[in-house]
Amino acid sequence: MLKLKANPTFKAKVEIPIPGGEKVAVEFEFKHMPRSEFEGWLNERRAQIEEGIKPNQDVDTIMKVACGWSGVDGDFTRDNVALFLDQYHAASRCIGEAYGRELMQLRLGN
Image 1 (cartoon, one colour):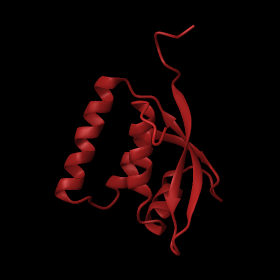
Image 2 (tube, one colour; image 1 turned 90 degrees about the horizontal axis):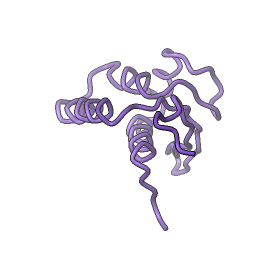
Image 3 (tube, helix red, strand yellow; image 1 turned 60 degrees about the vertical axis):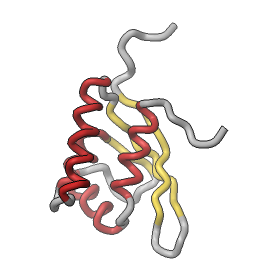
C-alpha cells in the first residue's frame, strides 16, 4: 500500500565524472522533500547558478538534500563534502540533477 507520507530518505546512485573521462557511481542517501519545499530549493538553486555560485553555497546545497553516501573513502561530513566538491568540479551539478530526477521520478532512457 502506498503511504500518504513518503519515506524521509531514499538512496540513488549518482555518476560523478572524474578527470580522464571516466565516471564513478556514488550512492547518495537523499532527504525527501515535499513538493512545496522542493520548488523553493529549486528556485534557490537556479538563482545561485544565475548569480554565480559563491564559496560554500554548493556545500550548503548538498547538505540540505543529502545525509549520507557510499562509495567514497570518507564519512559524509560537511568538511568531506566540501573536499569532494572541490576535487570533482561537476559533482554538485550531477548530485543536484540526480536529486531532482529522483524526486520527480524522471528516468533517462526507456
